[in-house]
Length: 406
Image (cartoon, rainbow, N blue to C red; front, side, top):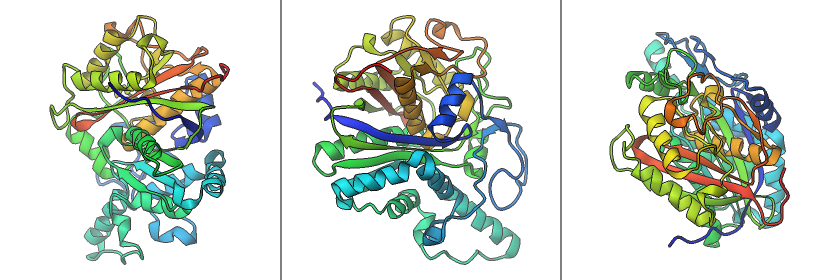
């Protein structure tokens, strides 16, 4: 038996990605099936042009050249600039400030997911070492070059004093942030929690995935019979969670580990099945109650195959499902939170995303996958996040008791 979640309201949410800044930009992209992918250029990240070019596409956020404001300059790096852009979107920072006034700074927690954090700044430092023979001056805050730099910056920028955690489980990181936040509130350690994820473009990720032969030379096509791999993207996505029974709700979460392989998913899908079963159980819902599934959908052969078989095992044919990485790229540690944003937009506005770039749907998904955006009123959505190392997390969102459909 798994326990039900305490009532967790999603009081606010926002995102910045290659589609733009804020909920209106992402909703517009969903409605029009717009992709934000573009060819990788030599100057798309880092302090120097890429030493070698890659034939691939990326989901790049424009306008991250300006440093952070002076009070937080010691945290300055591309990843934290992206986080700052996210905090400014949809008035999210002001919403958190009001929540802090209600609950007290020590009762508002922070749980963020990232896979690379500020490693781009470390890469830049080594670029300067190679060119000039010495590192740049160490910033005032040495923690900039640690995995916790994202959470340290956001905690300082928001003035929060509650529990602060960084989760780094590859592509499930920011989905697991929602589960960790629910535990903090259920255990009485926080009255509200800011959750989310931020990951930015950097050489380690782009060339690392290329070394694994997982990067596509064309815009990625999730669940397409001709899919050739992923496109890397960058994003910042945040949500404010509070204990309340109304509004948009986090209804369930399930976590598991395949313990199968460093990078390949368990072909039998036992771990993904366990995460989905737990999420539905904790939400108190049968699979038939789910009106939309936001798929992890990386467009890699193995991942999409395992996820397709999971969907076919658990959901009735006709259940709408789609993958959005053809719009944003794979945003790694931010992907779980960004997937939650797409699910929440579907609940709030009654528009289900399509699957951009996909034209020839693989046979096992033809009864489920929506290629074009769809107008539909749904009450419950599932969002999947399946990461390297078999780290799985499934989230269930829905409308609170008594709430009307969108």
